[in-house]
Image 1 (cartoon, rainbow, N blue to C red):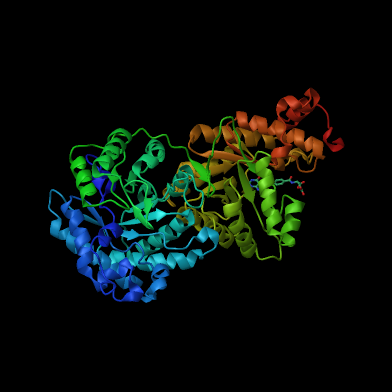
Image 2: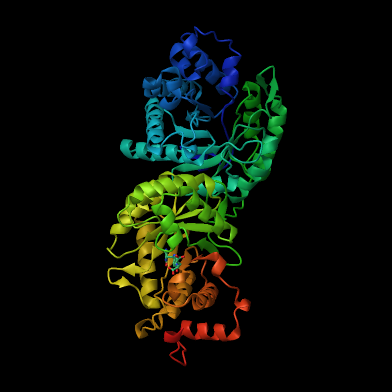
Length: 607
Ligand code: THG
């Protein structure tokens, strides 16, 4: 099934609430298989399948194109609450099989009906350390395997509260599709609470940034928590920015608590009115109902779908990285995106000492300090000879995941370190870095990780001959990396950030006198040929070996020239970058002479 194709002319209509519908059937504890299982809707597929069939037939009669399986909580980690964890695969499979049987009964050539395997968020938040990535992924894998084997046509990973939980589910789906040599469309749907973010504090833009890179996601959207009215601003945002089709499944309004029970008051006519706007004016292409919606609501949506075409959207997409909270573009105006350099064991004695003392809280404080100083993102490197870098990365990043509001750049040469970081990071990280020192070897390890977790990547202009010195060689390596990354590993140009690297100009070494110009001109060449690609520099490298004041001046002047050539991002100590007007004329002149190799005197030794 091709979601984009199916929704070109008409929106696709999902069904309504499962729980609310089951409640109207006045089921007894016996129907659930005994007191101990009462309330476990997922067990009904075995204890009373007729109740589940009734939900499905109600919505199919109402005209839903897609019905959801009664498997929202059929992952072992949820079923464990009823001692049913061993049945996760079976219940998922039976749930899908019942739905498939019903869908086939109603399917016609003119109106095919589909089954969406429902995958809920479980009861655990991995970003809060409730559960580890691998355990959660395995649980989703088993649930999804059951849904697939039972005949689901697509998966809906819904009511997501924690992006890391969504990443576990997406990793499970990727693994399952590889193992079974198949592929189903996936709808990824987050829940935005009344306060305007996901439960973990995630803004809709951060969710979109983190999810958009996943090829296996066919549509992105929102469900639950609120009614359509409260969703409107975020619906508008998604329809204006998301390259993927949009799915919206609101509750029947905000729930009202009456005698300890949630009541939903939005009428079918009101839901239809909002959805007319969402589809017809904003371009939403998949609609349905969450909590409180009934057969009557879905009837209204399916008749609406017969007479409305999703508005053709104009998409303003900005490639970005994100933390669990917010999204940061990989280009800002004025440039550059400032990547704080100090959370680096090789770049800061203070950070190194904190790591050696395992003072994780103070390490997090250093991160926060850099944000205060103006960093838009932070480079993070915990490598230290003799220490367990995987463990250190896990300790630091699992804290920074929720404590640091800006995106992280994972700086490591070790593949397992990169993977452990990506498994503990809910946002969209940038991996620092790949290069071609050993040919394709490093790319072969790192790029599949970037694909699997949706990360962007920094690529250094280094090849088998070492670090490129001339602009032509830097450009040639960049082109080679683009070719392999895009054509062999499925990355997009917008996922690649090139670092044209510079040797220090502070050594006074004649061999490197042109290093600054070559680095800057290589940026110009890459941006001209590949405007989608981003560029970055570790600016402080240029001035190693000079005294602190000269370093600040040279770094600032060099950065300025690099920006003029098209530099998008800079790894710097934000507090030490000076605006040009704050540097006296003599300092600027000297720095310019060094950068452009126009030195009149050999003053460097004296610096
Ligand atoms: N490109 C990419 N990543 C990189 C670099 C790069 N990561 C590491 C490095 N280069 C960028 N980070 C730093 C961090 C600190 C310093 C230089 C580069 C630095 N530190 C001072 C020193 O060593 O003298 C301060 C030391 C201290 O505070 O103890 O200069 O090029 N992709």
